[in-house]
Length: 155
View 1 (cartoon, rainbow, N blue to C red):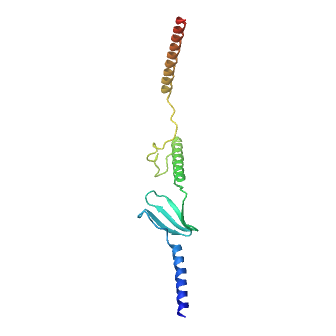
View 2: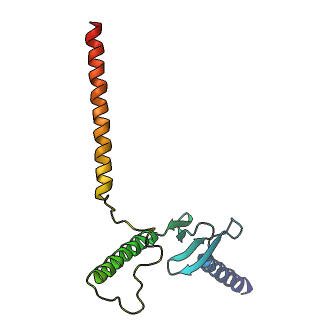
């Protein structure tokens, strides 16, 4: 009878141990580099050095961690797009001679850093560039003419 009770106790202990092992997070071998949080499918692993997040779960061969998709770049692009759209709307309101709503500033701080608008050259800059290209063209024609004369004189 005692053998049977002992066998049931040992079997119960083994079952409880395997159930507890399923709840235990994977081992942290990097000395505190990773932080784990329990989720329904396993554990979320946060790499405290890089900020990468992975979902770790029990597999047939042990624990496996799969990188969680990083939507930060998508969010940053959307923020940039919305800032540009907001700035364009503010410029349009001001161009129509209307006042901005209370609390709104004409441009967000640092708007010049992310300004993606195209700055066209002024008429004076275009004229200077045309004059420069004209001088370069004439010099090139002169060089070609001199080269032709030298070739004709040698023959």
